[in-house]
Length: 486
Image (cartoon, rainbow, N blue to C red; front, side, top):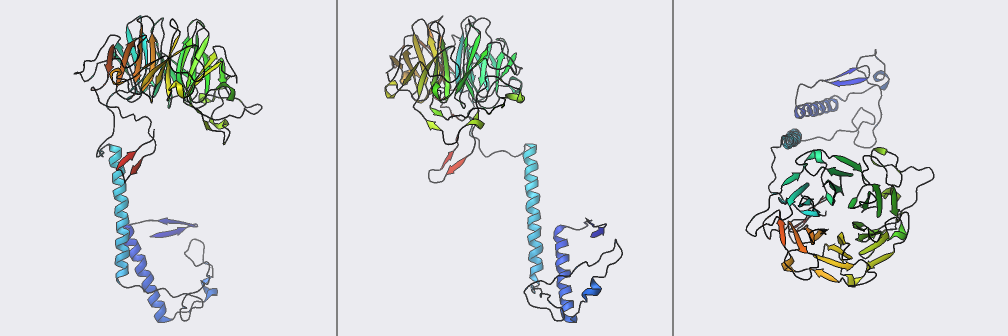
């Protein structure tokens, strides 16, 4: 029942929604029949006479346009007669809608309780290695896993037999407290074995762990980084840390021991720099050079307005902070060929590179990880889409072929995204994102050569799904395929 009090309507329901609608419909039909048979005449002046405040009353009458007129009532349209079955259909329809709402509510409650299980799940149960680093002092190799969000530590000499499902790591870092998610860049402090891991996609934080850390533990130290950080390299003598920024096509340089909201000490960004979707980075401290791989996507950025302050995480004011996406110039996006650019270690601002390695002869296809062998003067490139390791002289420039190439079925390379030169043990490591493995070769290796050792996180020959941060999903009915962009 509806009760009018001081201009407000309060509904006190004692019946179901369907029952109330049926009662209202019945009353309307009966009233129409009564008025039609009695030819009741309404006097507007009497109808509009105000009653005491708080009583139900008619406050206005307006003539409705069109329609058949009811005898004796000027301008009043005749209600359309409805068959007796209409009430039953209305009640049934209202009840069906009520049942659907109840079922939807029950389904949501079931999902919240965790009772609803999927028919099937597309998921890779094994680690997908994205980057690799060696601790030669403690004889350990460290691998990041972008699939299950882990950092795994193995004995450097571990070798998974073909019959074994996997090699058990010595230690694992994983869990919410670690802030480990899409870790793609990795560095091991040669002095104390601390692990530096870069998050590329979600948590804009560089995390540093003590070498003995394991389980779901908080980082020893954190540094808040720009979004889209990918590669990391450290100049130990200068105690400077170099980070590539994929989305903003830039390089930021921090003090090695920077923490929390500290600002970079240098920034390299701009159309002249040759930076275009940079990924890997490696330093040649002997020749004062930095090498950076580019996938090729880039857009121009407008400068900050006068008085506009750069801010990082938690809106902290920043110096040497990159121009981010909100500064992108509409229509300036372009796709350049993959390349390796060479800059001076002290480069900053919008300056041109000293050299560029690019062109069809280079055979580069999504060049990602980089490593420098300073003793041999060689540059190793993890060539993702070509499933190869390319080797160039550090003096290479232009459209030149690699001096060596490690590739072929015997190598067991599978879309490598990380590479590391172990100068002490004369070895080069590859992190293979698409076959659950890390492989190691002697320095100087070439061609279709079998690895010295292999560390696997899954069965031999088990392909990785390669699902990483999926967003929308579509279904191809013609080919019966599920399409998921990453």
